[in-house]
Amino acid sequence: MYPHATLYLTRPLDVATAREVLDGVEVVADGDRLAALRGEGVEVRVSGMPAGEIATHLDGLRGYVEARCQVTSPDLAQRVNDTRQVLGLVIEPGFRHGDGVWRWLAALARAGSGMVFLAGAFLDERNRPLAAPPGLALETVRGRAAHTHAPPAVDRVLRRAWALAALAERGFIEAGARSDDAGALAALRAWIDLSGTRTELEPEERSVIDRPLGTLHGQQIVDATWRSEGAAVLAWALGLAALPPHDEQADAAVLAAALGFAPLAPAVAPPVPALRPLDELERAERRLLAVHWRVRQLQIEPGPVDFVRFSQEAWFGGFDLFGIAVADRDLAVGGDPIGRADHDLVRITASIAAERHQAIAWVCGDDPRYSAIDTST
Image (cartoon, rainbow, N blue to C red; front, side, top):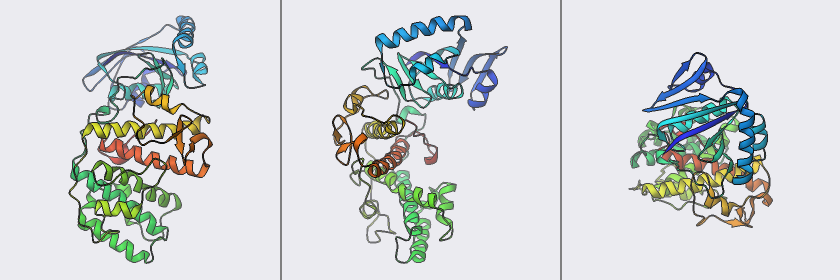
């Protein structure tokens, strides 16, 4: 548990802004000064560093970074130079990286265009490391305990897998992948109702399923077809199928047979699944988060990364590389280091990573609503 953190902000926060970005949190003011945050059984006391002391403090901070930290973001120096407000936070009874209080801090950092200093590490508002002492692994609750929600029950995981498979099939039908589009769509909708899958669909998902044939726009079709990657993760979580490598798309026919998804596998009986142990799910979450982080990092900062070392020092906790292909110590895509891999295959890998990250975070209990899962890296 961490009792302290510091916000370094380039755009000073006022009480009104804090109240705007912290929905459901009690924001306590002392005059025009932010004094405390309260909620979820936690109190965060806030103290602002006097403006006249900030420059000297930042000089000391630069020395700390130079002497103690491995810098992972080239814009850290500019963030330090641009800091205009420093807020010290005392948290009682403490918090873990990734929990509800962490989300408050991230929201304030986002509003103040700043960063969070936690246990010696600098993190940006999207939870990406900017600098940290080598080997630091934050005490994290990434996964099931990253939120207060319990993991979904096994029957709901199966319904969610069916819902994702149904969305993917709707996309393929709209894209003209079936010989009898109208018949395939009618059969899909009938099965959704008969199987109980409709109860799992969120409003936007129901809209995609129920739209008349020929009325989905291009991005809706693309988004729908990619949902099969989330279904693949849930099939793995239910012990029904192996998860393909991070740069290989799931096979819809294999997935349908594993899940008993009748529109594509009418002769297959519904499975009797069992959810994998929680520690195994959380191990998978760290691995899938790491792959997603790497493909996003390439977009932000092209160039090689020592992914092997990252597996040992990741801010969300270490993860194993069993079954994750690497080349020249970086994540491999199509057998090549991701920075030198085929661009089209890298784009496909990025889409796979985003969908799989969302699915594993949901099954670990990050949020009951699938669409509400935060896949920022």
